[in-house]
Length: 584
Image: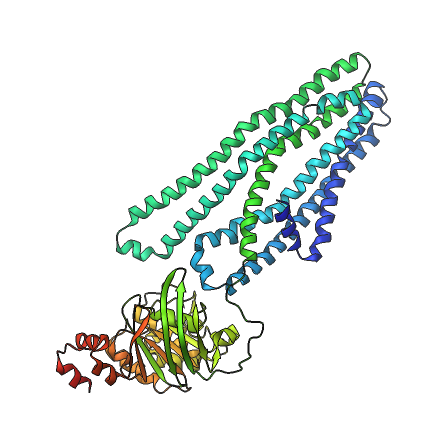
């Protein structure tokens, strides 16, 4: 826990350190002020009531009122300061975590559930805030209240004080035992919360699939299972607390009984005055209340420790793919691509094996192959979402590992079959890669993707707000917006991963014609299953089992009568030699 507290302190802006320390010092001073009114109560009883002397009465009451008002005013200032500083710290820490997420690599997101990451960014961070705004000040407040009250009461009657605090060691042993039992339960509860959030997030994101397969009841049962597991983990912690709470409460309340019984005897035997007994009566809660709070504080500390540990993991993780210290600066990209004996393993699975090809700037390469052959992996390696296991990938003659990531990915425009649109306007989505684009430029790129016409018919045209699921948009419409977004980047390398799979043949032909007459030169990398999408490419690659089985032009591959030729026959409904003649 010390490590988590130190980490949180180190991540606090130095300008908040002094403010936070000052607020905690106010807590100490506020605890010290608690002793003033009980001392005045002694005078009120002994010097006014018992002595039948009303002269000091008004002065004592005025001082007691002033002390109360001052103490509450200081505590208000302390709480406002702690809350303000904690919110600022968590704001900065949340910003840092989000920035860290932005630059983490694909393997990180492959291995972390979205629901778990959201829990770390919300509930776990809030417990860090709770520590700074409440837990640390309550620890200091309870400790100082107990310490100051004990010292003061010792000066009044050390015998009486020892009788009151003799149960403290017993209480500390119970607290330590409770702490050992509750920590693993908080770790388990945190994991159950993450699993429940993940189940909810997946269901919301995939609600269309759920409805399409009529799996609402199954999803309800699955979430209920996660929800019940989270509830049971909560109950285990509460049962653990309720097992120890009666002992803590009994010992704390025992102080009041000792005060009344022993204090009465001390007055009878002349050990205490009625005013001194009033001090013990007033301050007995200052000894018992910190003991009552121990259980709650330990609960909170354990939850903070568990949550802070998860936040630390997220803050400290470093991306496996980052700029090389000696990365070469490339002000511009030409678009030359070369794969040299590239092999790639994902964990223990071999995805690509000894892949080699070369594309000159402005040329078009098309890739086809059965599902799982490694087509999408090619483009992910090119943009360096992953690093090759063997071999090298060169862009403009330079290994992608020696490029600066921002420059490499900034020169590559990607449009995929699985379209993700942001909760923004159509214009904002198209201009996502270049916010300086004018509306006319956005419309021009939308027109080239055959999207301008249907966008104009939306309720607010280019100002229509869309989101990741679109607003009544068809799959083909979303694909065309994604293609316009890729074109608007004016990339040196344009990657189209089944970009026109959801559009009709006429629209596909229009888009292909527009791609041949772009206002900028770029190398095109097409992944498709339609022969019509790739037959005009300068180089066609056929991938099977992660290897290039065939490569060449459309006519060359037809002549080989391999996978490409078979696909061509099926798509055009041709047979035998007719396919070759038709291809020629």
